[in-house]
Length: 177
Image (cartoon, rainbow, N blue to C red; front, side, top):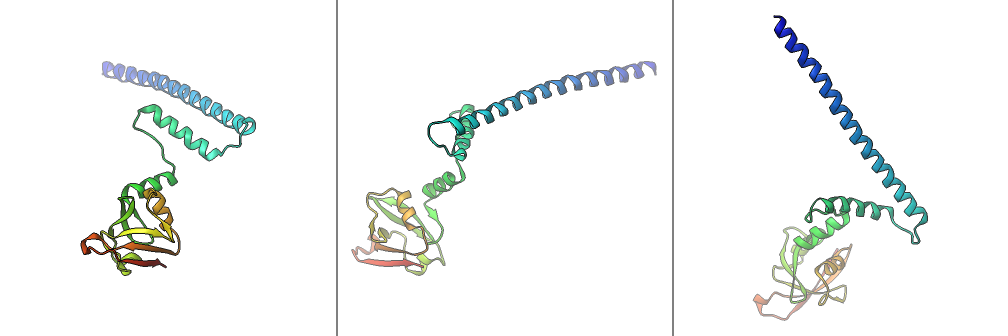
């Protein structure tokens, strides 16, 4: 009985000692982290007050976050919500409003598929159609992102060539309302 009591007593003492050690180590790590945060804050303030050019603090913070992630490995990076949305649009070719999925082919926007019950589908846009002008502006020579940006907005007029399957060079205007 005394032996069990001694083991429990020793276990409690060891637990208390280890808890204090880990607590102190954690506290020291937190103190170091807060010191770094304070230093970072001071640097931002100095840059804001004394840098030659005016800076956008939101961009600086995005760059700082990106720097942290890139320091982990070469594959990690931060994208602001705006950049992420643009990247998603560019890689998927999908965007709202018109209801079409697009890609670039031969320097013009090619419709991959119109989405059912959208302005594009109701206007007769078909898979394989080429969008050659947007609001009178030539699409050829633009990147997909530039063309997609031209398509955004409340009302756009598209001049398209029918798809090659019909072997037709006919064109049609499509207005997005």
